[in-house]
Amino acid sequence: MANILIADDSSLIREALKAILTEAGHTIIAEAGNGYEACLEFDKYQPDLVAMDINMPFMNGLEALRTIMSKHPHAKVIMLSSESSSSFISQSLNLGAKGYIIKPFYIQGFVETINKILQCGNSISIDALQDIYTKISIL
Image 1 (tube, one colour):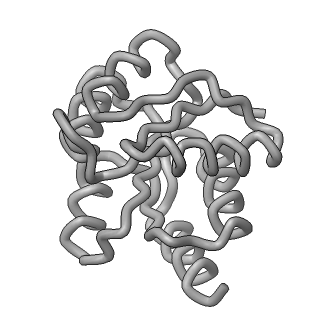
Image 2: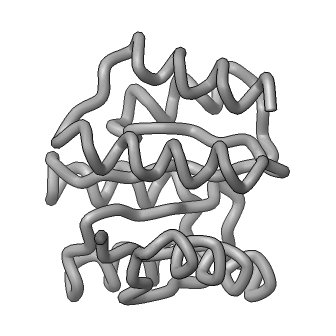
């Protein structure tokens, strides 16, 4: 299905995401433990989608998102974070993230969100994001 880059400073989270996404039929083509590595891996592999944490060392996910989007404006990046404040969510979306998933999340909702973003081409409407967020909140 899709080639995905996972960026999270926790190796346990990366392994869990890798298992979930592989089970859903996707291929993990690269992993990164910080935002700087995520930018390098994105440039190297040009993945179909990036699942990226916000709180990471050396370069956080928002800085990495800004860097990736400045070079690759059509990149599909989904932010994953335990940060649930609207300021983090709106900042991520304003920087170009196609979605924002709050940890912990339900596996089904996570996979549905990934697949929805991959199907929507280079952009996803605010209505679609609201629909996805509502579904995840209900689960």
